[in-house]
Image (cartoon, rainbow, N blue to C red; front, side):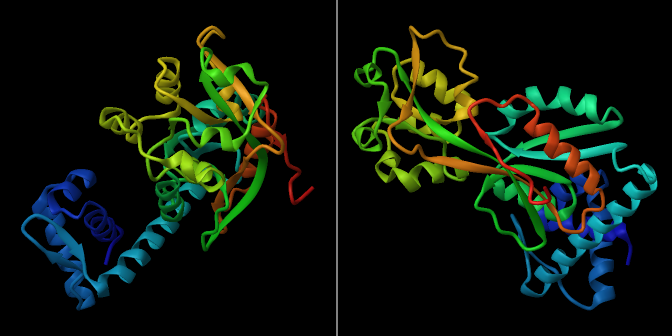
Length: 311
């Protein structure tokens, strides 16, 4: 049993295809297939159902694949410890962020990190919460910035800041004449939201369920399903509807007031709590601390910073 065989097994489980798994491992398919078969023979268990078009993990194989991921993650920790020596602020820190945070956090964060940890290189990945979680658990990421609530075994979290939501609408919209908007006023509007799978969409629907009614225009619905907050901003500017944004995204507005206006919610605004997440066994606590301090010093506007639990 070797680490290479473990990588082959995990790749097949993720790709569900021997050819695609071989490509991801940069080996030939016969080499990968032989490694997986050797691994199965050594354990005396069949890990995969080989179909013509798809490969499925067997019930017996699921736990073995999950353990293989953990072993590979720990092996990566050994390599990092050897390469980084005793200084946790040297080497590479692999940072994940959800799509509705990364574009608005990173421009201010990177210069601060460069100043406070000049020998630490940030490798950044944006993705959905579910994907970031898997990559944290597998060791492919060291730390992630995401939205609470979030409860995953083996993952620690530290709240960073609370971020209120605001309404973005065309400057010509009838509601633009008001200083603030109530949630009830949005129930009869075309509210443009991100597609399913985005936690920000779910958070909006928690406080405004009618905001999730499908658009009558199929083309618009398709665009929203695959879009980003910036794409939605352009669609609002074109008059396709209104939207709800996190405060940091609203402050990144690039359109003149003659096209778009931002309005706060009346009363206590809906909001989200943003946090850092990392594996409980992550050995570079000092890097997490520096990252947290850098985020809070990065100049985010419209948020309420939270004290560390260690303060």
